Image 1 (spheres, rainbow, N blue to C red):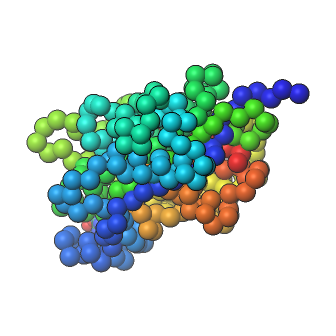
Image 2: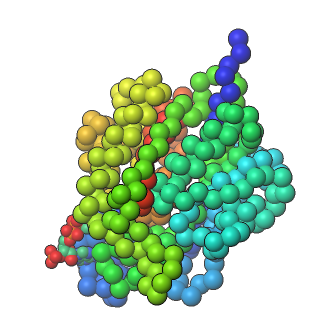
Amino acid sequence: MTHQRIARIVSVGSSVPERIVTNKDLEKILDTSDEWIATRTGIRQRHVFAPGDTARAYELGGKAALAALSSAHRSPQDVDGIICATFSPDFFFPSTACKIQQYIGNSRACAFDVSAACAGFVYALSIADAMIVSGQCKRMLVVGAEVTSRTVDWTDRGTCILFGDGAGAVLLEEYAGGDRGILATYLNSNGALGDILYLPAWGEKRFMKMNGNEVYKHAVRLMVEATELCLAKAGLSIDMVDLLIPHQANIRIINAIAKHMNLPSEKVVTNLDRYGNTSSASIPLALEDAWKDGRIKDGTVAVFTSLGGGLAWGSAVVRF
Ligand SMILES: CC(C)(COP(=O)(O)OP(=O)(O)OC[C@H]1O[C@@H](n2cnc3c(N)ncnc32)[C@H](O)[C@@H]1OP(=O)(O)O)[C@@H](O)C(=O)NCCC(=O)NCCS
């Protein structure tokens, strides 16, 4: 019996800056408190580069990519496609993906970036899935790499407390052995809601602007909807899901999604207490935690879901 080609996630890797900023540290520079941040967001600390640090997003992404390759016992030259999701690139061009290609020592892959803010990882994963299923690539790196700390106004307590720097990468391989791999993806956007969360590319004040209450409201509704539609595409029901691995924006958003979907907390992966919102890196960072502590086993069904500026949102259903 021949199986249809499917894209399988074979490994994950990550990289974060060493420097940690706790909520207590933020109390020293902002009118805020550990108690306010922890109860409103679930975040306790984040890894961020020091102001003036010249470290690059592509270096974080490159380290995450090398970690994913090493854990799958693959070499950089085995890869024929690299997609990087980022809203905090080092350059408009070359793309962060091209810089990652150079950093890891690959000379044969196609490489490009995807701009979908915090939904970037799911968007990039969906594109990579399509490229593998269509036969265009056989082995691809999907990377989320962000230096969010350079995009927030550190005097705006409504935004800067939420974000962290980091990168996560997964290695995808063509697989013809059955039903293990990306079972379905679903993407959607609404440009009419662009002004509730945005980062200008030009002008004097190039900082992220956000209407937190509006984002919150749409985030819960749209990630629930995307997850339900994606599960339907995969032909699965919510009780067949072992793990929800959501974008790590706010613990209250995550808990509200889980409640809507009737998912018990042991099926929901969270690590935003340690990393904050790392945008396109947050899902691979959470996936890595779950993989390391044994929650990803042969046959585990996981759902990724995320939403970000655009608005852009989506879900992916994966059987490991
Ligand atoms: C940002 C967010 C945590 C704010 O929480 P909230 O419960 O909605 O709080 P509000 O914005 O209503 O603000 C409540 C009060 O806290 C204040 N406040 C805001 N940030 C604060 C901070 N860091 N410390 C202390 N007080 C703060 C506000 O000024 C406001 O004060 P006021 O009542 O005197 O006007 C929440 O809206 C959120 O997480 N939204 C989603 C944002 C997100 O995830 N964005 C990224 C998506 S990818």
